[in-house]
Amino acid sequence: MIDDLGYYTVGTEKFYEKIPAMFKAQQLKKEMSWTFNDKEFSACDWTKEPTQSLDELYAIRAKQIREEYDYVLLFCSGGADSTNMFYAFVNNGLHVDEVVGSAPLEGLRDWKSNPSNHDVTNTIDETFHTQLPWLEKIRLEYPQIKVTLHDYFEDMLNYKADDWLIKGNDWMHPTMAGRYNLDKYLHLKRIAESGKRIAIVQGIDKPKLGIHKGRFYILFQDNIYNNKYDSVKHPNTNPVFFYHSPQLPEMIIKQAHVTARFLMRPENIEIYNGMPLNDERYKKFPMSELVSPPNLSLYERGIVPAIYPVLKKYSFQAGKPDRMFLGKHDAWFYNHHSGTKIWEMMQSDLFNLIQSLDPKFLNFNKYRGLLGFKVWKKYYLLGPVANFIPQGDIILSDTPPPVLDETEQLTLIKEMDEQG
Image (cartoon, rainbow, N blue to C red; front, top):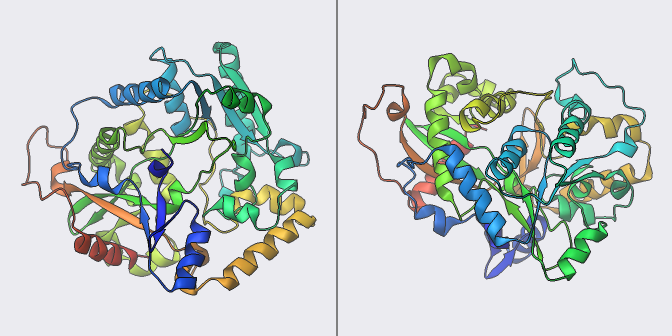
């Protein structure tokens, strides 16, 4: 199951963490590759939309997880992905054993809430205005579900040198290594030691679409799926992705087709312009793509009505993380804890890591600076853009072959990367 979350290969050696894989590739002077369910996804016809509805597919996925595991724990932030995931279980009579909300509450005593500020630097306000009310709602309406508020600030204060980097994988932020660390919860240890299998489920991720030479593609990139690690150090616990799993690729394909049609509706032009990749936009405004990239927050939140029909109400939301290294969404930590020894250790560890790596493993933008590690990508063809323009049931053009061979993948990645 761990392979479902993606892994790297250097020579014949397999790695589940990115940093050790990069150093091994650097040491051996070998290429490094990323696998994300390549065999299963390449066997799918991504141009053919499944006939089931999204809600039907969400229910199938929830049932798969419930039947495979004895204890189902959901990470719930109050955002759209985890909320839809939660309802996929409870609306279909499938029991959730526990929900966990993560927040660094002990580190927020001096934080001044400002719900009118939706900038990325105020992301922490989602804790107070979205996450905590959502957890309380679950506690009141579903008393059979255990609700755990994971205050990970203590975890942050106890970070070990370099260990927090390995756990961060791609997300080199102060909060990452503590957010998903559930190893201190003895009730989970006892459940695992009793022989029961625990699923620790995350709502990763929304479909990322791009347009290249008049065709829609879906994009998978490794840094998104590196937002995970084994939260409870026990062989009976498994991190599980709800949405992007080889057990139900039909759900991802359905989401992609629904999203593509949604983006092509004239009233959604602003969301369309926030799409991660679009070579037509790049040809018109190449410099703006490098200096000020598309508004990914607008895109991800804009497509919510299309892919999550069960959600009717939106809570407070701030900007999405702006970069993978010390992103502005952790501004609460920089502003209130910048003089601590742990912050000095983090800065030193990250600086030394960057200095030790070959620059080819870094994602550097000459206008926006160092954004993070190099990103590994996979693309799958959805079909011509014309097929997704709202025209009833009329097929506007022939569907091209559904699978890109290795050469076509490499060419596509190179051309898309030129967009910055």
